[in-house]
Image (tube, rainbow, N blue to C red; front, side, top):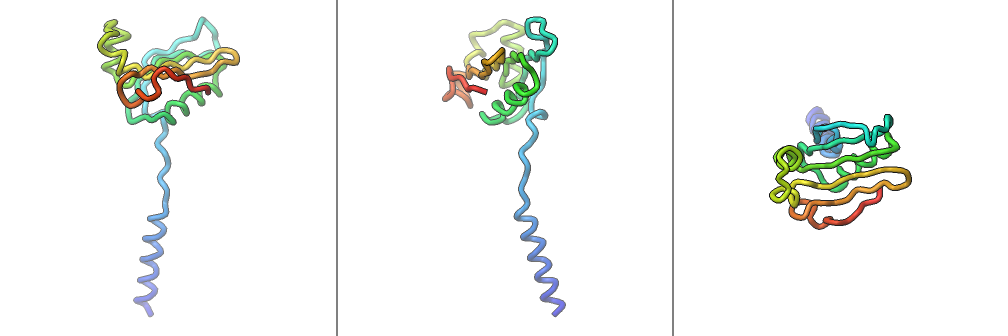
Length: 135
């Protein structure tokens, strides 16, 4: 009898562990704000240059934009895929080599307009190039 109790307890523990769901990683831990500024001098605005630190998909970027959309009436952010691209474009002005691959896009919110423009020609988001996603 004792064997059966131990056996069923082990099965219960295994089933409980297998059904546990993993939560999605917080997107705030996956990017770095390089430059933070007020948009057009507006006090209650959010302007920034953001560099992605980890794996991002379309939903992660939209989630970030939605969070900013809910917090600020005016937003203007540029999102880069990596620090090398940011340095090349923003610091060194080397647009030709990096703008097609490193610049993911730009999110702007002003008044009733709130949308993200996909700007990466080659890379993870190339299928979205030139499209706007309404936030």
